[in-house]
Image (cartoon, rainbow, N blue to C red; front, side, top):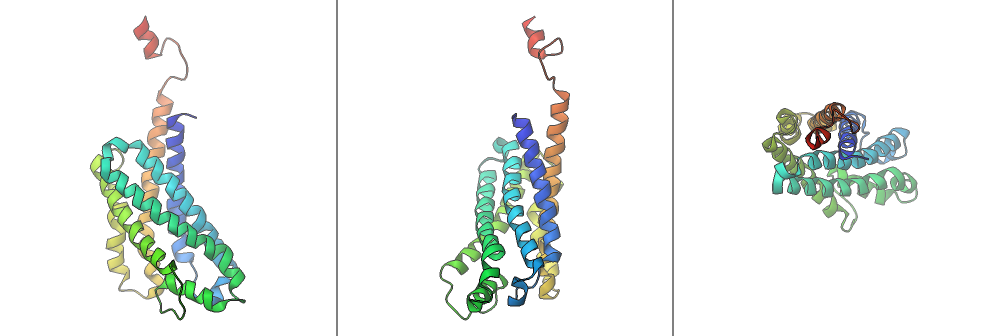
Length: 228
């Protein structure tokens, strides 16, 4: 598989992750014990787990396309995002496969896990899990900001898309903070839009480049012409 093909796949992964990221927000059920055993809870967290994998693949493609242009800032943003998403994937796995099994047998533990995510008061010691969640809550938005700024400075892909990815979340948070708690998740929507936009730019760019290149050796091959 060629580099262009891998980059196009990265673009598709970013588009898919961005769309899933947006769709998940309004569908996510409330962080309550009763929600844990519902089919909606299961579907949303299966989708979240898939989204985190696609997200990492997508930003890897975006980063690989402009690794030299983004420099150390791009690497720092990519590393923060990848680490934050890895922690998020771990929580998503627990939410999708472990919590429904423990909801009846260990309800206090499940309530404690839900409290970590919702930020509500916990009644039992959850070990390192709260610290991990706080770390992911810092790494992910910081990674979006740093990586988005690096992509904007590089100017290889759309600066508007990178700007939405970088600054959409903090601006949206200001707005949704005035709304009820159940609507706070809508503040994350700009990240998904920016990611899908960057992915489309990467996919379309590599597709146009691939289609314009010769596929075999012949009279149209610039190497053959130079040799002649």
